[in-house]
Length: 556
Ligand code: DON
Image (tube, rainbow, N blue to C red; front, top):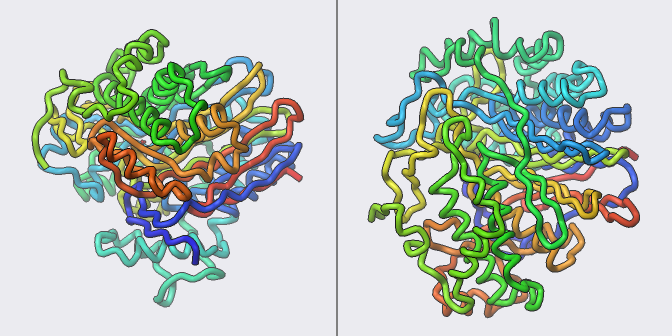
């Protein structure tokens, strides 16, 4: 086998020992959906065919993946949906990020983060988010959007990727929750294989209630009590009051402009959009495309821009309802100042980039999908349980898995260290606060026409995966399939390390970067299911990133 993937379970990175696999692409004039889970992609295409718009399809895919891709698809987590209506007017972000329960305190993690605990769950946002998207933009009845997910929960044939994912989590000794095993263990014992039938009757009932009674069925009444009871008996924090108080928000997207393209991207409480725009603004100061994409200087400049934007992320970003986010972060002037600090031949040590943040010396899982309908309405949606299968707790009798998003808060007040732990104030835990995210669902527009819908999982690597895809398309003119397949890079300020995928065909590159002062490490990055649109012909090419699974499905 040409490709050897070693997935480090439960984390967002995986070792990739060969060149990234080629994306699978499909070109069409019609609506198209691309996501990690083939049966969910088919659901989205069916909704488009039935006359649904891109938002309808995105909602149906969101619920379907809660069934078909339980490591990240969810109703017990949260995320962000960027929507651009077909007329281009008033794009919005439907923000459905989880919130800290009222009982959460700043010092929750000072004795150590417990990612698989009940305490790690934030108040889920997905169901309210999908309902808000539907109320604003939906065309088909709500019930119709949940019907395919209900059917899949009643019984589905599993594919190889789902079998592998379930076998991995079930074999892991840290997966201890009895309800999780009751729901996902293979009946009769043994391991799952392609072609086996998975039934999730509790989840089907939960989805039916949401279909019949709307989002309130999840946030109030019996389902809310079930979750609160589970929390109470296991040291968790979420109460019925937390659930009843949860709201999703419509937020203004972060906007940017990069070499002729308008960028419409996620806003806080995700830092992804600001990091994306700030990094691209810095790079715009350099004639990047004068050198090849994988020339040492190109990779160096991209790394240096990323490093500086991530330092600002640590310093300034958090939930905008709690922290004032400075507007200058996405300004061209700020980018010019930062660009002027870049040495074109030498890595700047991260400790020098933000010396005002005191450093202490010491030693997941998400999924993204993209949709466009025949009218040109675009949806870019990333949602998550944080780690793979979240905190690996299933709410008894309700059949859904809980997130462990509370681990996205800065864990220890005041402690910022070289390992990448951040202790700055904007993202410390507070009751009702949303934890800072890196999710970066993004839409690019040129001359008023959409040209790219993209995003990725990958924790703090997410903005950088999107940056790589955008640069590949805008600076290097790559077709979307190539842009998605091309090796990626990541630098997040601390740890002061340039992570990169296998620079296949450029054997000297890593060595050249080391000579410039970079510490380099090889690892896989992201899963960026994207759609490129040719503004002249209107043809849409969807690219299923094959770093995980992934499928394109068209309206036909
Ligand atoms: O919101 C965030 O940034 C993280 N919770 C995302 C986690 C993630 O992407 C893990 N997956 N691959």
